[in-house]
Image (tube, rainbow over all chains, first blue to last red; front, side, top):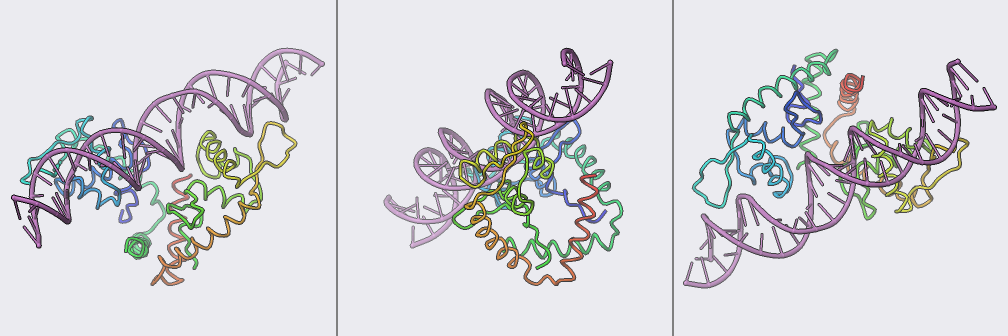
Length: 127
Length: 127
DNA sequence: CTATTATAGTTACCCAAGGTAATTATTACT
DNA sequence: AGTAATAATTACCTTGGGTAACTATAATAG
């Protein structure tokens, strides 16, 4: 499984912990980068800060993320909680299964080719 | 320009007539198929009926669509108005330009290959 | 032919996820 | 020290997805 279209963009309901698309994007970032500020996430996701604030507030209410102290008292640095990492792992399995399913019949060569071409287009878009 | 990712799914603001993504999808269908019922559109878009009702109501308020008489008094058959077709043409230009821009450096062969592969995946998803 | 079932659409709600404008607190810079 | 910039929040608006319950009409079974 090389091509993982939902690696970081998910539109589906998942397991019993149903993460929404934007929530999963944040989980993904926090899991792979350890922690993040809201501005960092807003740049990563290409959305405005209030959008991130809202989603993070929700994730905090759900007990999935927690603050980590920072020198800069303006910023709010956040990481996944133990529960958050557990949920990430669960959802990861669901997504992996889903991606395996939708890649049935698509060869490794084709996946790499599609990744390459779509990346080129993406670069043209965000540039 | 073979690969047209936004042919029918648009996420961007357009010209002075700013069509939203779901609105454009409906414009696209009506322009190419002449007219449609709400159920027809809900199948095409893979969304529920109330979603279509809302969007169509909005398009009607904007003067972009109008009813066409039907034998079956239950259904509400709709088509683009003259204004609707004018807006379609305007937006079409904007999208074509956008798609040309984001395909810079992507050969015709690559576009065809990407279309083929992504179609395969799409079929796995909607199946 | 009537009674039931199926279909098309609407209404009233809920929610996620994007946006802008204005504000506060803190930091950086001149 | 005073001003700029930055991080985040709050209040508000919008689109666009969903479900449940309903009405009106058409199709079908007995």
